[in-house]
Amino acid sequence: MRVIIVKDYDEMSKEAARIIAKQIRSKPDSVIGFATGGTPVGTYKELVRMHKEEGLDFSKLTTFNLDEYYGLGPDHPQSYHYYMFENLFNHVNVDPKKVHIPDGLAKNVKEFCKKYEEEIKKAGGIDLQILGIGRDGHIAFNEPGSSLASRTRLVALAPETIKDNARFFEKEEDVPRYAISMGCGTIMEAKKILLLANGEGKADAVAAFIEGPITSQITASILQLHPDVTVILDEAAASKLKRKEYYKHVDKLYRKLEEEEESSN
Ligand code: GLP
Image (cartoon, rainbow, N blue to C red; front, top):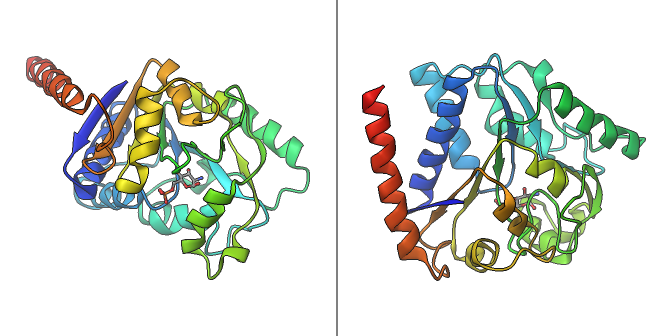
């Protein structure tokens, strides 16, 4: 796991966008897994800037989103569908036919989830999956206790998550109680993973998933078993890591290697 610690939210967003853009440039028909929440908003803003100012081309991409609130349609302003178009897709040249976001109004949810998994496979699998993390250590909506081998399915949200996400709704009662979410097993099949976290509120979850044991109580901890994970943290989110200085030290060395590689190409 590569842990990159940067000064603040702005630097985290720029670093994340740089990695995503590198993936898109090296493979224009990449399959990208997108995440929602407050964390990646700045990253998406930077990607929009790169599209407008540097011609970053989204036209050949296929995209899959991690999750969607169950019961919310695409036009609901708090749906993840709405979020993705508002924050990214409406501002870049992505082909809407290649965008996949779980259908929060699916009638036959089991059938829908099975198909979603099949579509990911048909697209050749996810090349780069972007992730945030919940304060309880969840990825997508894989709440504590979710199977670490889980697949896309209907999940019930934990009380902490409902409370945390209430800030996006008028009142807590409006937050949906269920969601359709990729499983930990689905996420683990992505070829590369990029997890972002900022702010003190994420410091415990970050320390637990990077340095604690692999446990279904912190579903992000399964990422320790993935061969290609990059984590970008701001100082506040990294503040409870025991080996913070060590991660900074090795990151510098890796960067030096990368620069040498790039200049020799
Ligand atoms: C939700 C989403 C997650 C996201 C998490 C953190 O629960 N399902 O994908 O990572 O919130 O959100 P935020 O970035 O707003 O802290």
